[in-house]
Image (tube, rainbow, N blue to C red; front, side, top):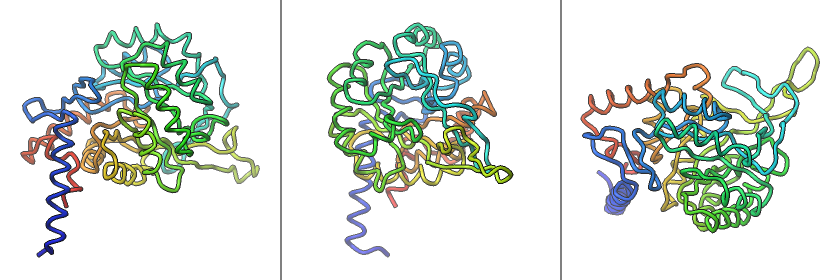
Length: 327
């Protein structure tokens, strides 16, 4: 038996879970996986993560046509950039290391791609980056998208991403600046390369973020033992894939406990069981990246697996949301 204190804690956690369910629009089993996320209607909680198949409107539309509930563009900056020198990506035993360096055509040349992607009928979220609040607010004030995901977490682009996303004051300032420039929802993508991700999440919330996304890649490195040289052109990069899933799950779990805004999970999702695990940890929705490269139909596969699992258990997506916090 649990103590009275433990019992009270259980009831409090359960009440908070129920409040969050109602607030974030998680629907009943009659609608299966559909939900409303920061005002956006999604047919399922599965989204394309930034950086994968997100460089053209055609590729974004293809992913949406293959079952994604929403798609997120490659990160867009003020000016066109070519990124780091090759090699920029390498497969390792536990996933992928990449150091692309945020190559992009500039937001100024991307609106038509977003408009093409909209043809699939799902929300198109623009991932944007900059070196300061003015950069972010400029892009958000001009670009037309269903929402903005602020990349303050890329681990391998000097002066951008995690270089500013590890500072709570900067994260709050950037988020606030973007909120002042757009009526679209603003999501802040957080880096795991910090001592305590909750501090950064709370800073984003104070800045007015509508949601946070956890996590971006984990800093990593690979070396060619025959030459002694780092394999990546940038020497180090970000690790993605199945190896980082436990890290991402813990970050989602921690953020759920302290934030009043939704948490979107990302990192190492390759099947329906991974998606279920993230939602049980407290993610309202999830993003899928690396696994798309090996299976273009992964969104349909995961949706089908989730529906079968829920039906077998007699649960709704409402029931599993934040489930681990009830224990």
